[in-house]
Image 1 (cartoon, rainbow, N blue to C red):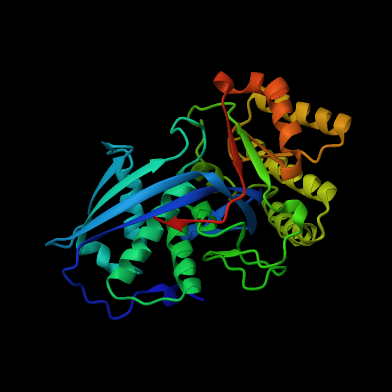
Image 2: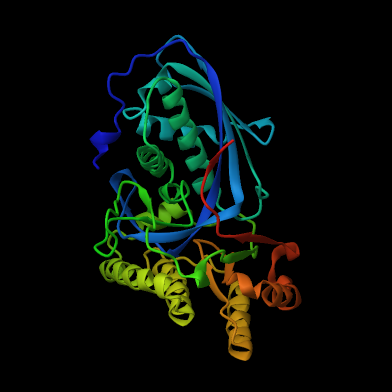
Length: 358
């Protein structure tokens, strides 16, 4: 597939008005992408667990209008929100060639998250994927007729132009984004569902998100990605991601907990190592992030648990563990880790199946 395959051909606007609604989850990368080229193309491949409970619910009402300017209002959790408009304006400008009808309609975008806005969970992946899916449903209501595969690919393609990681939130349980030799049909343009048979060990996997710091990051991910240009370790990092993804593919099929833990935790620490060795350098982890990591290592050594951690570009810790270990891990979180969470807050989540139309 190329970009040209996603351009809506022979579009003729009609006077139809309507309403569509989607809910789309966030995701957590196991192999991280850090660094991107023009048009949201990743420098290296990534693979993520799609989450289940942390999601964005977006309803779009579209009304035929006069004039050719973009026209939309954003209602976030019941209140008009001007702060979100610049990002959506940029998104519309990027996707206009692929969904030209967006200039012919006024859009009322009503959106909300199932997780607190101040929770420190990045909502760009769930939010932009939900909006992209709504645009795809509108495209179908205006007369397009697509296979499920094409619908999901174009939705993922559009979502990527809003937020890179959003392309991994359309489907589940595992999604690969970025062209790599070890995954057939992998693409830089959109995410694809991991097609291998996942070992029962990794099915219904759990993710407890420990909210160490709910504040705004001092360095945004957008800025962090740009700092990979000229980074002294960038090329080696990109090679490492390809190698780790190839090995993780085998691990997910074989059920090897030990190697899964090693790859996933190494990937998390490598991501932050790239931040700490860029110029300018920065640190997004907090002291309590390190306290939690050390507590997890100690608990795993003492109990033989298959618990592990991963990190996004921030201070919060995703605690990953098998479904069979729920009781003992949550007891450990309550007794030993909550003290390191801001206001004792954490979110219980698990691997999900992807976005759903409401």
